Image (cartoon, rainbow, N blue to C red; front, side, top):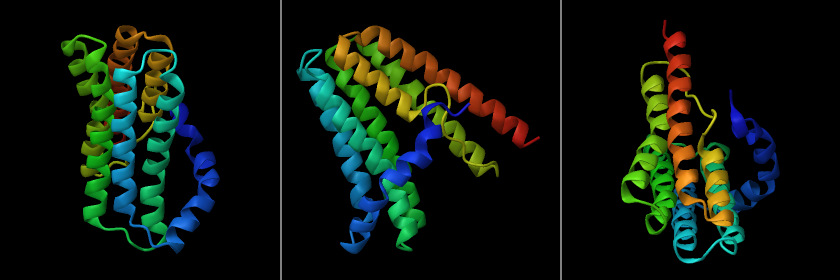
Length: 190
């Protein structure tokens, strides 16, 4: 069950020209990781301060950029032979920081406890995947509510103002995604 993650190869093909241009300009993959986090923080600010539905378009554009940078940083590192263990750590930390930054935009729209629960749940699928990879299982991505689906749900909140229901879906869906990944890892390691 890969969800929208199944579109990753198609999306990577669309970004090939951008990747080539970035490689020619010798842009650091770490710069792209940081740009993704900044796009996530900007999307959070728009979500918090611009009412729905006018917030939808800028939030969608910023989150599309966030996802693009998340795809480009690792691909650029591989294309240019600049993969490093530090870069891998920075990539994972950048992804978690971006996830949390986006959800921080809900602090102006929903109860703190719900934002905190959604933020914790949103990080669980990645922690499960990283734990599995550390134990020798393949690194899992996707799922019912992975990174891409969470971004889409945030756009729904920006378009409708339904912060509380969207956070509930993010929390429950992310927990489900973590359980699905854990079950796959468990079978893989048997």
